[in-house]
Image (tube, rainbow over all chains, first blue to last red):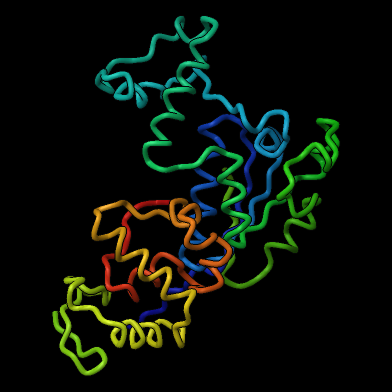
Length: 173
Length: 103
């Protein structure tokens, strides 16, 4: 059988969530694409704008309330993954900040940069960073409120045009 | 397995990375660079190659983040020097194993 594997030429990644665990997968995917010579664009919409707005992007958090998957983080506390994270504890003031702090520490050990530095790395690597116009309007944000590496504010139509091309894959996170 | 690079029989893995970094020399680097589409190696390339070999000898983990902050090269320069796969290509040319990791 002939080898007809089509290479991935470009990744167009939509980022709609604003928590630490909602942002990082998209950044890793975009940077990983660039490292493989694949073009990458990030399109931040809705709560994803948290990762672009200067006032919020240096303090993204992981939610400890209603986050049933949090047992994955138990090894960071030296406890087995089979122990569930107590829901009631998640709502106590300071717990989300502590869980966030732990996660940030673990990521730093793996040389994963904080969000601002990561976006700068992706931008320096040739990745493109866009904000969604509709979400900007809804959250009453202006381009000046966003970090300086944002390449533009796009409508959904602009996004589809920017994603055009054979070998482009659109990813929703 | 063995591969003939620049007239010498070299030990490489299936992807073409040298399995023994002591077998490397600059002619081998030049030959691999042509194969990888990088072309002729200039001073900028060789600075990165030397840095990579030093770090590998020290057992340091190589990431694109640490490369950009190394002081030897910036991220933009790295992508300009080795387009299409900065870490993948520069490590192959430098005769060191491909860095494993997602950053």
